[in-house]
Image 1: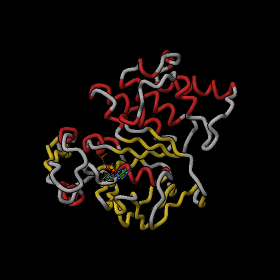
Image 2: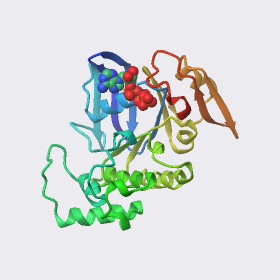
Image 3: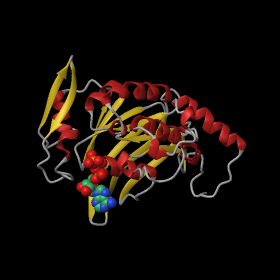
Length: 266
Ligand SMILES: Nc1ncnc2c1ncn2[C@@H]1O[C@H](COP(=O)(O)OP(=O)(O)OP(=O)(O)O)[C@@H](O)[C@H]1O
């Protein structure tokens, strides 16, 4: 187990909201499966954007490693939140997966026959090989999720980041998707952002709760007290599921609330 990413004293935010995250420290390992939880507006996506290099830290550092040595950049695959996908965009499944092979900064890359073969291989792994000529607007939520996961892993990244992947699908299909993630985790590290603590606990190796700052918990044996502390001022209710907390219900009447209608998604 080697370090893959080391985040030290990270502060990051936006022009009109400069202090979204303050003094965040986190290490991600090369075989990690890290779950990121936290209340709405706590800064989970902001942390992901900082790791992806989409926003610049105001303070602190994010360092990448390969085989224990510092490197300048890391190949990261990303599965975005479903609301960031324009399903009306006229693009086929084949081209979506192929676009995962485009090196950063090279939009007009010429694809080789090897690339095209790779697309077919990835599509088979994701179980979408029969959908390659379909446009993404014709897919179900679960199919789209697997196509985008294929795009994220196509270039054999060292890490994939999945932002709320369970928002794509019906609960009944989640098991298959998470089994797929278990297989992928044998080859690369995974960061999974999710509101669903039940999912996080059953899947991941380590947990971080992001709520303006970051509380890290190695392992998944988390106590209700840790959760309450990590979620800060949000009142939480934990429903028992065996000895594991299964679901956390929050009331969003504190100042980080970003969407008053989203109470039911937690
Ligand atoms: N582009 C932006 N410009 C200004 N403020 C932003 C921007 N994006 C996010 N924010 C604010 O930063 C804070 C953290 O947002 P972020 O999306 O990181 O939270 P989150 O934990 O991912 O939330 P959710 O669970 O609702 O997806 C929120 O208060 C949000 O309104």
